[in-house]
Image (tube, rainbow, N blue to C red):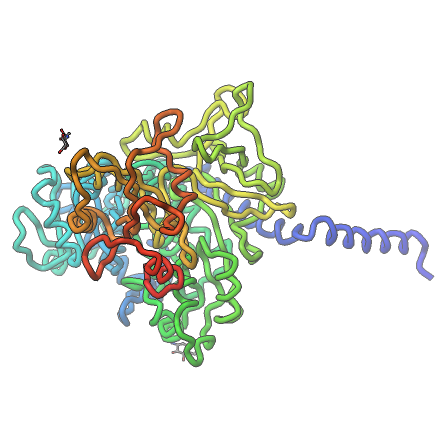
Length: 620
Ligand SMILES: *[C@@H]1O[C@H](CO)[C@@H](O)[C@H](O)[C@H]1NC(C)=O
Ligand SMILES: *[C@@H]1O[C@H](CO)[C@@H](O)[C@H](O)[C@H]1NC(C)=O
């Protein structure tokens, strides 16, 4: 017989286990994840205390010595080992060091699409202690000039496939910006070439003290984001944020043996920080693609033995829409890391492509908060608990959709929403959880902060996103507020589009917003316009104009011609009502038009056309 106390203890343990399963079913998974986060935080902290700041770039250098022959980057069948990437980036650094045109702390803007030299240029310039600004390759003309001016670069490095874009802005570019193109020769005036000079440059390392960061909070990159308001802004990405982003794949369980497939553009933080940074953190290999291709996706995964993929919601949807191919489940992909995949597509994706752990995360490029769904709970962006909130203090507050601002009670304070209700996600800003803001733009930085939220002089980062939390503390993305929306994986700033349309001489005013279209992620752009007196709407000219001045994802797909512009009580353009009304010609009496790329014009949106869009016969 066991002594009775032993039975009691055993019974106690069993019931504890039972209670834990019943009331805290996620306890162990949460704990394991938290310990991982804490361990990583501790490591960064120890480096800091020791005074030896260790950046992702320094880690790359260490790897290039430890595993020189391991492939770091595979691109179009070409393998670039750690040593080769290190050496070629040395050449870039040497070239510009010898030119003597750059000093530590200078900004260099990079206008390049996905290719190995993007990474060589980035690392090489970082080795000189420069801050590298990634320009979005789709942005053109006025908007591109705005982006360049906002980060005040000394130099602009342009990829060979971006010369058309460069030519457009060349006459208006400030004269003190030196321009270098990734080509052997060029006929453009005042433009230097890189590739010919790289061939003869030395690949010896540049002095290491050039890139030593004094502080992890020093800027390393500028990445452009719309930040949910206004024109694109250069978010300051510090070394600390690079390290945090780089830990993402590791935290989701990736290992040094993984092969990561990157098809997203490198100028966004997902591919640059999570993908390339994550690959460095792990010491793994990545396969880079110029551009995502739905039809080649699984073929590539098989060919390169890919084990980890990066996605955005649209990408999963495109893959699910592809015709079924024989053997398409016959791949080695085990993790998919990204954001924005909807519940229905998530289920379909798993059903169709097999047992892949989908790791959804939430985080803005410039934000100081992130969530990670490390449990594969379908539809959720992550989970929170008591301890997580100690590390990352955030709140969900009540928000007035019509007015477009947080609701304040009679004492002037904001209020938290109940569980299950969507609320505006705000994240407390303090020295351990800083918000670095935007380059050269104090006003925009301040606009992203909310103060006096729950008490005087508290500061919160306003994510602009509505999130809700379920009874099990899983978090779900609900909608985006503010004057931006997402389309085809890019942020679209409505004010930028209104400005462009407003340049036309027959337009009095344009109000731009995003509308949901069944079967598509994000929101499709729609512009409600009013005409100047006695002017008529020139649909062809309007088409030519938007296509010329805006990236394709930002051209409004729908137009609505109104007699008067509706404004809110505070004389802001009324968007909420228009968004609700959508683009159904059977329900809206105003004339509606649709952007038709075949006819190179806007065309009347008839009921038939509307039906063909909804049924997917007309692709958006
Ligand atoms: C992929 O894995 C298979 C089997 O493990 C191996 O034979 C093949 O060489 C690998 N392919 C590449 C591109 O590494
Ligand atoms: C518009 O046209 C009408 C009639 O043709 C004319 O009386 C009016 O002055 C015009 N208004 C403007 C602003 O040109």
